[in-house]
Length: 302
Image 1 (cartoon, rainbow, N blue to C red):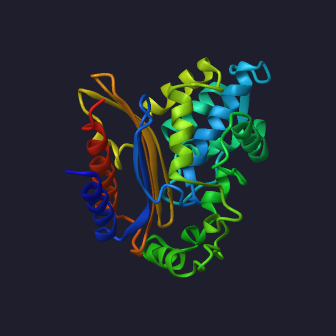
Image 2: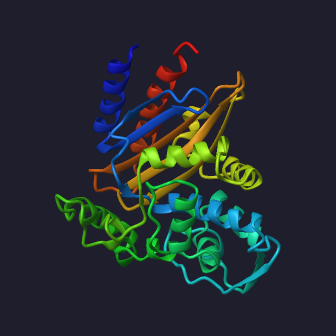
């Protein structure tokens, strides 16, 4: 196909689905990569759970946190569609720290995530990332803030109004009256930063090898597989990833491990121009665009 054609086709896929954003695909052994606007900084929604879990697992390896320590979690109060896990509980529960990590990644459990943030607060996660040499991700707020947006103020039938606000109220400098969408207040990152983080977990340099291995296991058990997984999972490919969704933002970052040994990290961060809650076409376009770049990179001679 050729690089220029692949990049053009990938951008067209996103545009035709009402999306813009960034993609980066990297061969984790050769370092070769292809991307679209990979330095674009966006709010990262639930992708924040990946650095949180890695930072907490690093602390486990240093003996600062006991992974078996029981954490008492109070009943959730969520009544809106979307949140999963502990936020739906109606009775107190006791969950071990390591199991909270699993829930945070596997089902994107916001309650489990905030229980982990009590152990490793946002500033501590950012500090841990800097210790590991990663500069492109900023962690500033809790997961609970992600379910305190205009979307929760509208009836389900009016959800498109919250998406219209998310799309239309952004400023030229990417400020936003919805703080979770304002890059100066939100948890933020780039496609490149997440590919770098995935590379650290699959090919550890500064991270503890056991910490990296455990987070890889969590990512391989992710149950939210409607976005990139249909184009990346097969009998010959293991796909491990985390999704992130907030209003008009749709993201996924993961790693494709092929049976022939080639391993490629993929990060897709997008925002939609379409004021609709459910957009299966956008999900499919993200996967198609990422797969175009993945396949072009995979065909390069080693």
